[in-house]
Image (cartoon, rainbow, N blue to C red; front, side):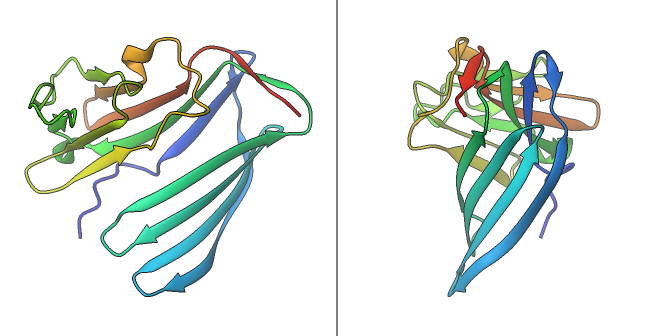
Length: 173
């Protein structure tokens, strides 16, 4: 077993230019059946309620459904999911276009992809990695599609960022 994450995966929501702080959250196991476990996550960022159903399989595959709700209309400026990886486990990228285009060493300047064209990518090293994919990008509000995925190398870690909202939207109450 290798801990490839530098810290936990996080969701950031920005309203009026300010990052909302997590005020509460809880996770509970709903069911364990064979090689599969079902979890429920509930949390709060400011006045926004977050709920997620997570299915985890024996090989690490996870299916995640995320839902944001609010009691009053709230204008969201930006919403990101950050996956901070230890640098030694994030040396290679694959755009998963099956033509080897966009595949190879992670450039020192970083890497980005338009997930609207094909919502899948892989990042890792010669031994381990993370493959992310989505059926579709329903609910995403992205103006700069070419940067819906950004991978930014740092001194000790590599930040994988999914830009789910990059242009203001109103979450209806």
